[in-house]
Length: 599
Image 1 (cartoon, rainbow, N blue to C red):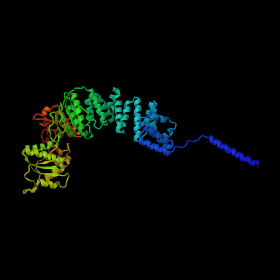
Image 2 (tube, one colour):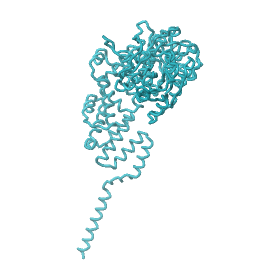
Image 3 (cartoon, one colour):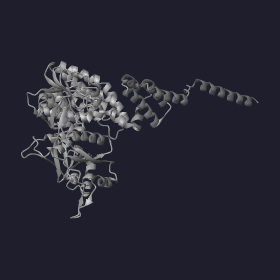
């Protein structure tokens, strides 16, 4: 009995001791409720507050393990770095819960970028550069962006400005538009900080097109406004943001003497007009360069594309000494400025649809198709071709040109005998050609002979349509019929294989376009070749002649007119420049001028 009691006592004592030991042991903290963490993370992601989001990511990472935990912690730090919350990012890097070994194991590239960032923030610049340069490819877009940004900062801190600029040039293509402006400003700052020997050496020796473009921009910016404008013309594909270029222009203008005689160029910066403005500007600049050292310089004034901005630009230009203004480019702006009475001649690069007159100093100079239709009428009248047929597309262009031709032709004693309107590439073309020409077999040789009451045909057609129409007209009795057309039948460059079907067709066009043949001994590019490089050679010619009008307007008021690259220019009573084009004939698929064109 005594032994049994002793056994119970021992068992009780052991149980009591176990309870006491359990009570004294440290308690494990309860695991966080993942539902609450997920809800907090979702709310933070919606709010887009980097501090709240990074905190939610870090708390969520505490219940994860392995690769998931490493990725979540890195994302928390990256969120702060990208938001420029650098001290907050460093605080997480010092957190005892930061799983650095896990980062390097599961996300080595992302981890190295973070460690490079940390080294730079702690003043270990050389180590930061080494870490960031040694990260192997491939990198995702976000990681590549982050690496280039911090490598550029590290190189700049170590006074390697040229290398830092290289990293930022590579970075530029990865950034959104909202961040590109600051990056491009940094590129300009870095390259401008190079001392003269280093800058000149880089400018001379670099084989990198992008870096070369930026160095040439710095060089042009230092040389002045004209050099900056020439750089812009020579680098149409450069990634420089328009807003930054406009600022550089303003700064260049501010450095110039305030009252110097010059020609002001004020064109819209709207995207829909960008290509046209580029071609016009290139033409203006070439005309200035060819005019000689004493010719008035050209200053380009930024224009935000509204009539009010244009008027402010004119006022600023006149105050700075402008003797003439070239612009605006679009008809909508001109329409709103038709009552404007400028103090100096303003060469508007368009015309009013109503043909209304403007104030004496507001000159309308454009390329309306009606001018060429009237030129066709005048040529027919001059050649004694007094009975005409019209073949025109069934669209607005066909209607405008047929109306202008008929008005001028009948006023000069001509008669429009018949006409046809056609749809593009219609199977009815053959039938329409026969209806218009009324072919019948020749009683002697059986060949097709057309109607006898017409002397000539005015063909209104675009280049591809003309390829089909000319052979059809010849095959249906119009073999000897004079067919005259406007520049719309010609693409503006010699392409014999495409244009051989048009042989025998006469058409009017600009002297610059028809003067494409290189002359013996010519070394540099011709005007035609420079115009072709602009992408829109006819608008290039318009810009060239706009400069001539701005500097030689009195010549356009004389009966003989001003000989230009778009034609002979005469200023009429309603302040419109009437353009008389040159004439050519397709032969062997090439446009052959019918008169000597002066270079």
